[in-house]
Image 1: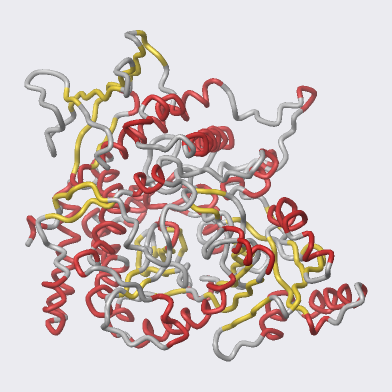
Image 2 (image 1 turned 90 degrees about the vertical axis):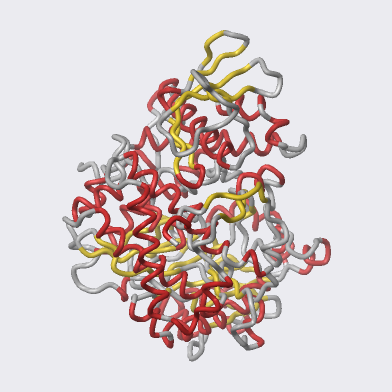
Length: 627
């Protein structure tokens, strides 16, 4: 077995005579997981100005000496009896680069091991967690710790191996999925980012993305009187299902429906996550099954691999076939991971609209921006729960699915696919994957960064300026096309629920009007400042500084140069450049953990993405000095 292969024990642990189903939960791995998560909690809660640090040593003031070298700090618990001291360097955007080995915990003056669960309870008042929310948040913290311990036990490829590819480039899909399942951190900003509440250990081993286990989806028939199927222009239901299932499987499912004494033409076929079928639909939707509004048909033949978003699956049997995204009533990172049948209805039309926009825009085409469309969707309306629940309730989002194009047909010979989350990945030896990609490319780091910014940053900036259109462009939502380790193209995904048109520069057809939101003019630029600078580049720049690849001035100066060159190419948008100034002295600090700490079961109302934001003052803009 090479180090790039997932151990056979990942999906079904050989427990031997001890019956130990949790071999990853050892004292050593638990201690490492706690130190890792306490480091992240310190860094992100300090960044969001929730914790108040005291600088230690000669001339120490109440807070950080920004942009200076490493210094010693301490934060104290609500009752003052527990102290966490550590060494950190404060980088641009108030990014706290905390040395995990330096963290020391004392309780009532006695040394104690860093403990993330106790950390949360010791700072509960400072963190502002309501009493009824605290146990659920602790459960998410515990799950995040357990996941980290599992990833240690499982083992992962080195950064160099991932950058080179599991097959050396011979199989693009296999290389892509090896990277996908090897990501260990999750969202870089959220402390509790691996909750997955509802999973037991068997579910974790079967369905967690990092295990890489093959999954076969359940299929059900759903009565057309309660379901809505929509597809991209020119694609009908039968043609879509034949392409995804194949004629023999389709005929087999039709035969099963006839065996249940129903007419197949009165039903749509829908894929369902096995966990959702086992844990929710068989109980919560029992009435629908008993009345033959839902009819179980068995498992499909294709094998899939769960992606980082946990409810989306890549077809490993036939990689050119579509992804399948399913509803899951699992609480993870501030939301129940369902899918709204109301949203499914407009999903293909929204994707068609955006695809046409991208293909018609010369600036985007020059930089290769692409998207993989959500080409078909099906949503099921359960009348019982819709009558009993509020709009937006998780009870209304238990049964829907969509199909998203595979990126494989977009990849030219000799190129590689990688989730953009991989740029922030650090292997067990402490090697960042971005450094490994730079080394593979043979380019100087600044040259590599310029290519990356051209492929990813500039298209997002252009969409803001020309259309006041914003994506949710975090690492898991973007696929990079690499050539010899260099990003040459960005592929956007997760479109219908994650894009927003913020102004009046576009006339939207009625069928896609849902994506328009009333965003205050001053907040529109946060689509770049928050979602790109603070949530991605803050971490990427710090990794390169810590690994000695590029200084902060080189990193941000290269980003500034890419934006300036783009602006020079588009003088017709000068008014927009001033209106949404990316070189402004500062911008509002929008805080993600504050959202989760306020309500870890629904952080935001997706129909009002601006209304619930949590701000904490302003951050100095690292581009301002290059204005």
